[in-house]
Amino acid sequence: MGFDDLIAPVDAKEFFENFYERQWVHIEGVNPFQDVFTLGDFETYLFSSRPWEMRDAWTQSGMLAAKYPNGAHYTNISSVEEALELYALGHTIVLPLANYRWPRLSEICGLISDQLDVRANANIYLTPPNSKGFTAHYDMHDVLLLQTEGAKKWVVSKCDKVHLTLTEDITRPEFYTIDPEKDLVNTKTLELKRGQVLYMPRGTIHKGEAVGDRPSIHITFNILPTTWYNLIETVPQLSTQKNHGESSHVTFDDLCDLSAPRVRKKMEIFINKPLLNAECIKDRIFKRKNEIAPGKSFQSVNQIQNISAKTTLARKPNAKFFIFDDKIDPWVSYGGRKIKVPAHFIEATKKTINKKKYTVQDIDGLKVEEEKLLFAQWLIKKGFAVIKEL
Ligand SMILES: [Fe+2]
Image: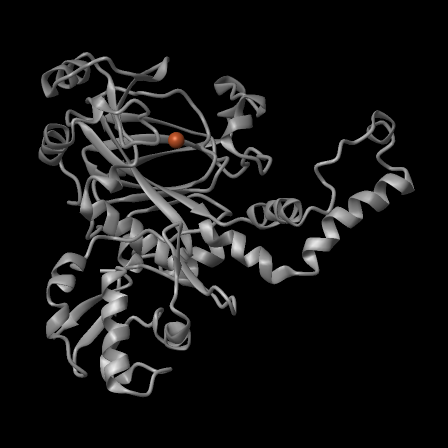
């Protein structure tokens, strides 16, 4: 199953042209991923991962509880039963970054990541019947919601997105504060049923409420692209590495007169110098990552001695590699990691590493079979490739 199945009957082309970063859409097809996380899974998840033990719920796959109108708060619990109690009292249970604990969610994040060239992660929301956790709000990134249990009524602002500056969440308190009375007048109400998907671009004002006599579970897939802002913000960072003088102080006179030609000139120098060497900017974007799903890496390492010229290898699921052919110190990155490539493997790495499937004998960039086998073993040991067929 692929990304197209997740958004069917809309297809990827239509999604890009009409909706992505533009307009929210309620996708009413029957989704093949609708069983990805059920109410039974919820209990298993709590039992096996004990998410309340995480100090920072949002960055460590922890747990929060949310009840309208107070929103999300940290819990001070230590058992599944206490989580159940919170739920019984009408709290929505929130499990951020659940893709790191639930492989099927990680696979879907991988599909989104691979299709849209973004980072993606998933939060789970369990809401008791006829309850709500949050007031009207907007999110800082695009979201794809998949309903997996019950139904949720969503009130969504029709088309006017809140304009967000392209800074990170840290400055969010300075952003526009929602006034539900004022901001939710131009809205549409929809019911997201099990198996349906709601896509909303960042800044879309929305509020949700579980309806009917069943609890609601929905997964929010958060879509985090490399933006132009991310690209441009690396320019001054790069420049400071080269010591062009950006760390020197700005005089108060210059600050008060930013349109003066002398000040403009200085700023232009700081901006243009690193741009002359645009290839370096690419190096800094290596932090960009596609989400990688688990997939037979350990079994592959175990079989490493048995591979032959006929062995078929596959790229690690959803991984995309960025190769930096620094003549002295070539490296490859994925998942935010930077890994050195032995100089004699760089040609083969360039030609092979991003191929989805290939046999050892078809590896380009190396001539001798023995070298190809060594290269294949290196790919497997580094987790870049897995054995598809011995
Ligand atoms: Fe939201």
